Every structure is written in structure tokens, then in C-alpha cells.
Image (tube, rainbow, N blue to C red; front, side, top):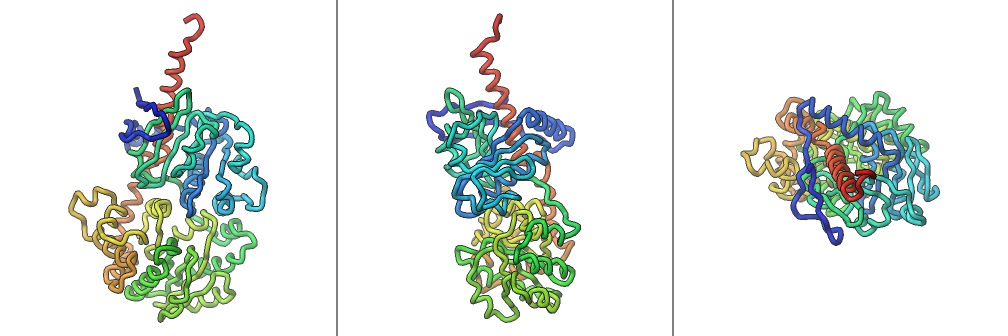
Length: 448
């Protein structure tokens, strides 16, 4: 047996992981695994992707990433994106062409149909072989009978410690735990944008933010870029203030532009010496960027932007970017760039959060220890910022141990063996084969 399936009375996931054949890093076996995935996907006319509710954008972004990655893995069929009604306002930033004021069923480019959950459940849905969710805490298990799929591949963000499984709906609901895949992240392409203006125009047609963001990239060679997200809650403005003081202490040789994608109360930041705060929509942004002097910091209140724009701006960071949740951490891992996380306010959590449990089992190198100590200072809004300033300064040196450390993490996380969706699909292929074999035993062929 490739996979053991666990019978459950309810939808409780098993406590011990079911063995799933992971794909080793060797090129030949990766090629074989990719061929298996593509063969399986080619048999699915429609795949249903579920977009679940959560207070932030992370859960929804994870399922949008699943859609993107399915296409990258070679899936050419149709995709039904079924979203919980409460997240409709977030989807224009995640699904290109989606309209918040549009109907509950919208045909989008790329063979995607977006359906609200209320519309989807208004009549019995077409029963499909495969449904996938990129993240969910409890919404989907409560609605399993209504999902209309034989196998639900339930994944979670990188380092999410529970709730990953293949749930098969037959006479009895069967669950194969995939929690041993929790350390894996979503692997997907982040394209280089040769013409940022053209890209931004496509992503933000008619947006008041377009002129300011164009100016940021028109002047990119003249300043450092430090994107910030995840400072809207939990003492976020104080953390951002500590970060900006650390930037000043690092003594950058150019001006620093800080686009902030969280909603914050910026009053205290405006009183900081050497710091100016402007909405990205302010007409003076372009002139201010042109005049930015070494050591000056320009904070641009940017707010929400489409996911592709967010990822592009983060890919251009020249100083450690700031993130909070697991999906944004996944992004930084793919980029291989230094970053802060605003949720780690002690060094032990920082070591594990950045480098995994293995970081506690072996002697840490000085770069690891610096990252953890620097992150603690910013995440706790400390007055003492020596380590944070040093981390930022080291990140400006292309060949520094800090840059090499994050570059190595990025390269380690991009193989098919590191790809959460690919590994989940390989496990699903095994489950589907066992399910078909069990069905043949119960219903013998005629004449057998």
C-alpha cells in the first residue's frame, strides 16, 4: 500500500502522519514525479479550488497561489474558484479581473470561474474528482457534504502545524494526514518585470496609486527599497518606528523608500527626525523621490495592492523587507532575500521561525544568531537596536554572510521536493489509486 487511509467517524484528522512517498531531490526522480502529476492533472476536466475565510488575506492568497501553481505544473483544464461570501471584497486583489460589485458567478481569464459559496450550494454541484484548498481552519470540514468532490486536498501555509490532509468522501469519510508536509512551502514563479510601468498599468488601471508607484521604480537606482507589511496590528506602529530608527543607525549611503501595505496610524512616525510620511497617492511623491538625500527615509502609505504587485515590489527589496504571516514568509523564502517578521519577539522563536527546528539542534552560525537578535529588537519595539542596525547594514553588502544565508535558504526551497502542492498531489495520486483498487474489489468486473 502506498498510503494508509484512516477511517473516521467525524472529520477529526489522525494524530500520526500517514507515510507519503516524498520526491527526492535527484533530477531524474523529480522528472518522474512531475510526469506523474501532469498525467493525473490531464485527466481532470475541472478542478475545484476553495477560498476560505480568515481575518487577514493570507488564507485567500494561499488558494490563489494554488491556482497559479496548478497552471505552472501544466494543468490546462477549467478551475472553479469557490469563495466564502465574506471574502468577496478581497478577491479583486487576488484573482485578476474579479469585480467586487460583480455577480456571484464570474467568468475570469485563464479558464477560471469564481463562484460564491451561497451560489455554489444553491443547487447540487457537479461532482468532481478533485478539490483543493490552500488554507483553512475549520470552514471546509463543517461543509464537507456540500463540496461536491471525491477527494479534498486540504493544505495549509508553510510551517502551519496541523490540518493538512486528503479527505476522501465515500460511504465513510476517510482521512489521510499530510501534516508531515507542514514545513514545506508553496513553490511558484515570481516573474521578473522588464518594464515595471507596463506591468503596473495592467495591474492598477485607473488607480490613484499608479503615479506614485511608477515614480518609485523610475527612481529605483537612486534609493534603497524596504517594503513593509504586517504592522497594522499588535503595536505595529511602534515596531515600524523601531525599524526606521534601526535604518538610520545603519547609515545607508542612499535615501530609503519604505512602502507600507498595512493600515497604520502614522502620527508618531511624522515626528521622527529624518523621516517623512506621505500617501503614495500624494502628487508630490515623484518630486520627493527625486530629491531624496542619503540617509533620509520616505514612508509611502500604500495600502492594499494586487498580489502580483505586492510580490513584485518585495522582489525588488534592497533592505530587509518586513512581513508578519506565514504566506509572506513563504514569499521571502522563495525570493532568498533578508527580512524581518513582526511576530517573533524572542530569539528562540526567531531561530525556529526563520530556520526551522534544526536551528536549535546544531551550533548556530553568527549570521543566524544576528538575524534572530535583530528580529527580536524590532518585533518587541525595543529602544536598543544595535543588532537590527547591524543586520540591515550587513544586508546591504552583496557578499555578506547574512546575504549568503538567505540566498541559500531560497535555493533550498525551490525544488519539487520542497513544493507543498506538488507533494500533496503525489500523495493524492496514491490515495486515488487505492480508492479505485478498493472499489474494484467491492464491485468485481462482470464475468470475473
